[in-house]
Image: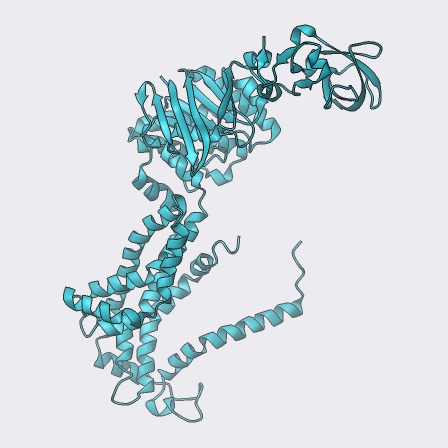
Length: 276
Length: 334
């Protein structure tokens, strides 16, 4: 029998969970609220929480001044492209690590993870120079490649964890049934790993969407995604908090909506293996 | 067709040799059982034949053609796994169709074979279910169905019944034996259960630590075990092996007598002992006898009608015709 949970305990737990949730969400909420204030109210001291004159003026100005649709499109292409390219490389890699491991597999996995410990700025120069040489500066293709490489260790790790849970005998049965390597990955492994692959995709898409270091440093005008769109409002002309907030809200809204609708998938994916 | 030949096959994992050089021929249409204690290499041997493991040296030929370096998909063998290994995301129909789909068989032929297999295996009502919605016995039948539809040159079974309960196991044992009669196909069956081996096999291969201890028909192994290991492994309850003075009377190192070849009397006999545990099976009773002066516990099998109780004194007389003799190396003497 499950442990009895008293009503009182339930209330305490629920309150605590909401408190922590709100604490984490508060900066985002504040940004959204600020986007509906005038510049004067935005920097008012003491700060105003809800009792202000709501205005859409900031959104109007932001939309007028910059081409939101172009930034959005760049973000979608870059985040989506790096995710798909990453999966194409990571699925076979994770397959081989999970099902035909060598003595060095564990080392390779750790080594891959260790690349995430290097501060990104440490490789900015070499990558910048390579980009210049190859004509990749301010191109979507260049960003797709860099972001894919940045997130590849995480994709491989996640997929590896999922694949490890799939019994090897099922893949062997496929081989006995006449499936070649391609058929095995396409018809047996991938369909069985769909939940895992979906949450990996989602997480990677979010990470790529929010990535600011490389997108800001390697783009100028043509390939700039929404992160650059936000940055353009923290500008030398002084601080315009309300407009900056409006731009931020517009940048995070698509991913927030995507995350909201797929939260179940995301949670089950991130706790996979930990909770049975 | 389905003759399988192993020629000087070895397998090592790292520095550990699990299969020393081994020769074996499995004839077309034969039901061969690999039997032995856990870790004897029987599953590894099966996986080498399947191609799921690479052999370290030697050759494997299937139907006379060299298959040593062929991938499993190209060997034309079908395998039934201990865990069934069904595709959880496919319906029963799609599971059974999978090998035919891989072979690019025409769809109507696929359907004809699925229907036929489903009928033979009592799966017709379950074709649209997923494996997760089936019982263990039904899953095993789907795994068998998946194996038979492509008409392989040989079937490989890797302990297919060990996940089933005792009653189902006996039923499936019969079904597999009947299937063998019907299809006349080569079958290789791996088990650690010598009862399965005895009841199903045309030919039994007894393995220990990768070595073949003996190859023969069930009755050959029962009547003429080549050494003390086979003598002790085949037959249930196991053969009584006696060393020391009693064996020396016969001029050998070890004598063996099966529990069913010993006469029991309350008044007179060759050896005297005390009844320990008596296991009543109804038709038979297994008696474990202490204090015989013959070494280990001595087991006899008598008819269930004879009443014996713990602590009774009984006399045992072996049937001299059925006495097995072994030398100091454990090898059978004529």
